[in-house]
Length: 295
Image 1 (cartoon, rainbow, N blue to C red):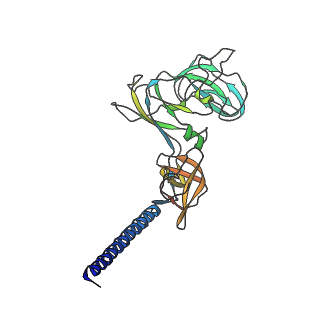
Image 2 (image 1 turned 90 degrees about the horizontal axis):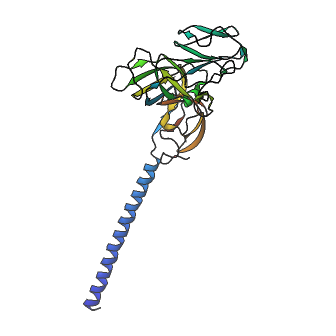
């Protein structure tokens, strides 16, 4: 074999070895990258279902307004009898009538604009409409009342921007008139949020000694009765809010979408009524948002 031929063969062998090493390195690098990606995909933050207390609430950034006329409704089915007079001024705590042996009182001072006629009425039937002589702010409490029950008594606090506070609401009442006019008279604006199936807007009535003007900005927080020893999860782990939702529960090395029945929320945590048990582990991010979690 002559030298030139040998040199050609040597160069060819060297080139083949270099190519093989390069391909092996690339393959190794790609495998490592793929493995890292797979591992990252499986690395999902989780939280555990635990028992704890929660104070359900609804909050809103809203505007100060002149308080709307509101209604007092029947707390239960029964015979309604009025002891008040239309057009009279009632003081907070005054008894205006009865349902069976239950007394109907007004939470704030105000003028009684309408009174329904004595009758056998259903629960939540509007009985009186009251005009409060002060300011208020509205909060959409649909989710809160849907999960807590429409008969839930709410309290609240408000803060007017660049003013003193926070201050307790004088009362939390429905937004608008719901009571029918007595003696065949019509009540202006009787179509209200209370009658709307989709929305329940509540008014935080401001104490009359609070300096406030219509149009000012305010933040209002309404709270319901605290619930103790409930199963809870962070709201970020749950898809859905009104009554039902879904979570990604860890089952071994994988995640399974699980439907859950939801209760009240405080904006940070939410009550799990059914679908999970204490100690279950779920993705910290709601389904459809967590990498590696099934939806």
